[in-house]
Image (cartoon, rainbow, N blue to C red; front, side, top):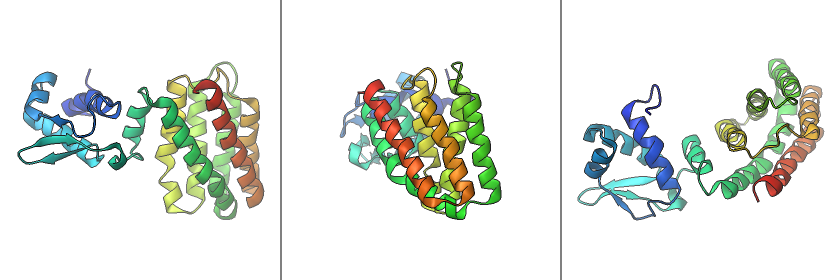
Length: 233
């Protein structure tokens, strides 16, 4: 089924992208666009558009007289949200989740400390609203609602840090949190201690307490890693 708004090349990507990231086409594999066009029952122009998207992610490269070649994993744009989504959907999920959660543990505590110094009144209010939304959805198996507030919370922290590099990681963190929920790498209800920590981070940021905001966020990321030990060993 073609993804709404993405056209036929989106249909191709939804299948071919996960196949590449899952290793079904190892690095160095040559993909023939005419054969792929026949397989997916699309025109060559549609196939070329799909290849251009894969090239933008550094998953493949096109060479004259050779074809479309799968790049080594070390060259992939592993920060691309779509690449993250595809990898989380495959057998590499546990390692991918751990890698991304370690990234979060390195970045988010520092971002929270900076947010306590730089957050605007509006951003502080947003953080509080998100944290309260997480509390409201933390019981009764309301993981989808909880996820919306959780993603928004971490986006605000990264943006409020005032560091444009941290802010650009918002999509990466969103994919990690979404992937954990969609692939059942979450408890049926969030850990109450983690929910409380988010409320406390919002309070620390509002109070301008950088050390406390950083320490509390570090507790959140440590807890996320410990959950992976149980749910995605």
